[in-house]
Image 1 (cartoon, helix red, strand yellow):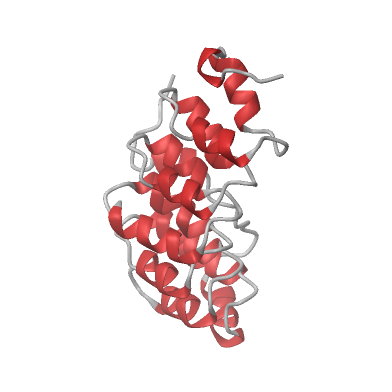
Image 2 (cartoon, helix red, strand yellow; image 1 turned 180 degrees about the vertical axis):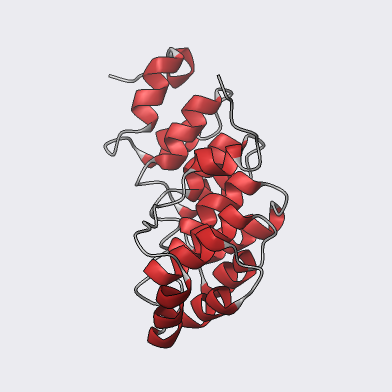
Length: 192
């Protein structure tokens, strides 16, 4: 029994594109769909090939690009290229800075980003090398939240961690940075 993929409803395509049992040819087909939800489902699929992920990382829609960026099979080189091609896209940089597949050169680049939440993500990432964490912890331009995240990272050199423990107020908790924090950064809070 053959199925005409062009005649399926969007909801069915989304489910099929996310299935690990889908033939790669069908996944490739769904990765080119006009629906961004179908494409995002295809790029998030764990069987997506490097070629399919490359297509997702170049998608015009940020949410689709992020689906590919968050795929555990995305390579460090793909992440690095995507960050540099999207240097004005904070959402892309946010997920790249938190990726367990990010390269050291990508994390170093993002550690110098103007947005403190991006730098905080680098400080949070458990694979961030100690040299980058040392720089973030010693940089006077690193705000409280970045320095707190540095102090909490197990890769932080002991001398930097001990100094930050003395400098930062006690009783604080370093929480994982959220996309909502990124989107709401600098906005005044409602008093209602």
